[in-house]
Length: 436
Image (cartoon, rainbow, N blue to C red):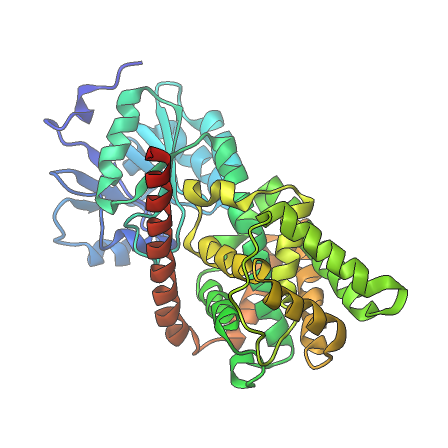
């Protein structure tokens, strides 16, 4: 089906942008440029305030409802929580302009795909997208997934041109590939940090103030946890509840944490020590291979690093190869936590210290127990499929960390920037090796 002439540069198209809470990253790098006009609609209760805010802003028109946007725009993006995408597309999708291009910015694509196929007219193109980073991370160089689902090449190029101002790196996937990749790169990492935060809140203790959890690995854990809880709950709920692959991984993560903790409690009794070492070494071999290189000295205050052991154990049991997705569509948080896990597992000294601490040290047993309980609670919460329950659990923990987000945000941004620079250097070295 040919794309109508309005999509050409000589006739600037109208572009629909949904100004939702998590779309802050668009405010400084807006794709509304080159004479394009933006038409936006949001919740009806926000209409008057939004209209007043954008009065006098060139090229931006705030509409009273989605029908006005859908029937007038050449490019329409639904920035709606996955929980509500079916209802919203059912309401406004039939009004879509002939030959318009429709996209969605949901974090889990299965519900979006079903809604678009069910409610959008057949003479409408579908080229969806998803930026794989949070609103506080610069989009420059970050992966931006494009899904050419029901559209000719001209429509894909049209969307590429609209989103080019983000200066992101395009990754081309199908709907199903997107959900598998996002589950493999986000589900377990989110579960780990959500569980850590809930465990700390349960004991009403900030670990960085006790002088017990110190060092680079602990700094990374704390700052990523605070970074996650500083965001809105629905950023993580959709992936966890609506992505079938994510549910499986979150369940396995809770099981891995539980089984590893049981082996730690057994100690030398009933062969617990040997079984723990064998299980950890097996997971290391599956995920990281034989590249161990000991450049570390034993930490002054070792702990079990149960969250890292459980994450790698989970990947090994599900046969997930995290490095396969690293260059493809990894989020900054995934890159950072994978780097931390790699540092631990490929250092025999650090890994042995973690195992020995898990077996023989008792000072962190209370914290490890709370972590296991939290992991199982989050797994159970996801299995219920309740967004309201997820929201309550998230926000109850979030309250505990209020007032700490700003300081963590600055350090977290520096850590992510350093990781991204390191990854670009590594990828450049690999390309040079391949070229030779």
